[in-house]
Amino acid sequence: MKISIGTKIKDGPWGGGNLFAINLKNYLEKNNHKVVYNLNDDDIDLILLTEPRRTSESSMFTHIDILKYRQFVNNDVVVVHRINECDERKNTNFVNQYLLEANRSADATVFVSRWLKDLFISQGLNCKKVEVIKSGANKKIFFSTNLKDDVPDNFKVVTHHWGANWNKGFEIYKKFDDLLENDEFRKKFSFTYIGNVPPKFKFKNTKLVEPLSGEELANEIRKNDIYLTASINEPSGNHHIEGAQCGLPILYINSGGIPEYCDGYGVMFEKNNFKEKLNELANNYLDYYEAMKSYELDSEKMSADYLNLFNYLIENYDLLKTNRKSQNILNIFEKIIFLTSRRLKRRIKNLRFYN
Image 1 (cartoon, helix red, strand yellow):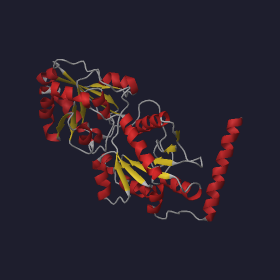
Image 2 (tube, one colour):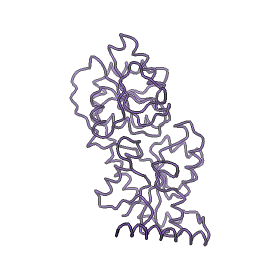
Image 3 (cartoon, rainbow, N blue to C red):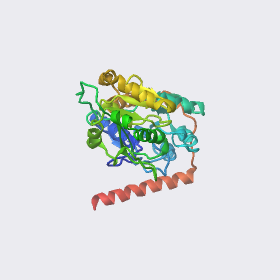
Image 4 (cartoon, rainbow, N blue to C red):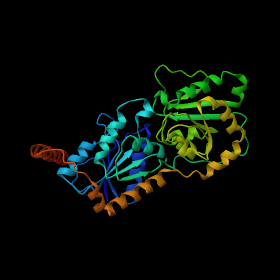
């Protein structure tokens, strides 16, 4: 199968969507599938739309590009739209409507949590095939050493984020930082934050570590005892998954899709009971630590679920095609322009190859 993933992959520390694309690509190639990141080939079997906003740094193509490709090049291609974003996450007011419009190009839609799926359905999503596939991290990098036998004297709490939006949890992280002013509290807990912070935001009692990725990040996480996530309206996130795979019990906020990933592997808190729930986790630490051995969300499981869906859609292509609405968007003159531009791009590519 030839699969086009619409993500512009970045090196080094980056967001969860970037890690998703890397992990899925590696799994698909390991299972003998061809992965590309554009719509240049005529024989693509399946397109995975991940970021339809052309202004995004991670976008390789948009839903409009897909509709042109299907209308003028390959009408048999299957299109899957992965949605892992929403207005509620960053207090914006345009993302949901744009994603709903982009979803018109899709034969199937994948959400990263039930919370996000229900949100979009309530706002008018109309796609025949809808799935929830949870995210996962690379277990070869993020793994637990399972070496703790005793309750720590001082609980080292950690979190990490690439994004610096306030909704990433900085209200709670500031509250934690303020609590550490108290000598008795500081004897029991310490806090490390890895990643970017909002402009002008300063920690007073927290260890701040620059953004890390891969093994460096995993090694830093494993130095700690508890993983904290306070991210508001997070559709899924990768940070708490990486913490959980490193064996750290999770203190997680009751918001967005996060509880779906953390239930049974730590303690959930609300904004008004953070301190009490932190103490609850600490007082029952070894029980929660033992539970982490069964945490099963990783990139292998995630990628296998995607491949199973892709195979199902290819096998049931005729049914998918009957569910499509007419989506012809361009006239004959625009078709000529589109195909001419496509041929020119190929000639330029070939000239570069031979030179």
